[in-house]
Image (tube, rainbow, N blue to C red; front, top):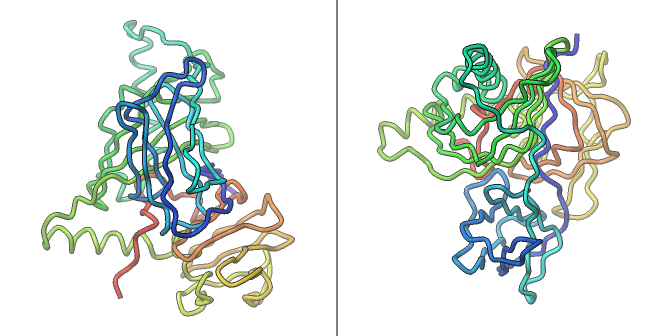
Length: 328
């Protein structure tokens, strides 16, 4: 049975050239006023900067070819830049958020209880229920707002400011720009949209670093990041993966589901659903696009795939930055 459908929209993949320093200004689209302290970053990485008091920023993106550049600010919709030119000074227009969920007082005992129940479910589905999640905390959980008037079968939420998350299991401090969260009880499905920026590696001494590295490697093995790393290197078998058609008997050959358009440009592609086996864990993947871009550091177009099974259970507490590489 297909359970725990997780569809994460984390970004779009388009061409960005090599050796680039991007310069620009972030402004309010309506007023034209500069927006200071806007976050400018490569999604899912440590790489980012902020705009200054004039709304201006400068960021070097050479190490991340093919990645969009994201811009987020409090009370504004996140946007991204996919076509970038170093010779141009870019103006980024951010649009203010008009929240669908109104602010309401939760002073009544019934709403206090309801928020407590919703928040518990939100944290379980958003952070996860793995061992890592038990040591993962949202430091500003008061920023999460719920729609108390939605269907009894659905929990809807968003955050009015970026969520600051401390992962004491993997040793990361991260920021998550949550746009939307929706959990449907009857189907036990979860969908959330947003972007993530890794801010700090908490491994400050050799003892803690060893603990974190052990947990990071354990989390990495069998993950979607591990799969795409192995896929890029054509080392699926060496890394313990098998790829089959759903209900298939024999593993498919690498050439059956990987296309290489040119050196350094690969696509994950197949006309039907695939089953990915790792150890005794199974994952089914469905394609929403004919082909899916992916890179050697584990990046892939998340909006182009739907995951079922083991990999679909990966949540914020189990996410690793794209810079992560397991020790040899």
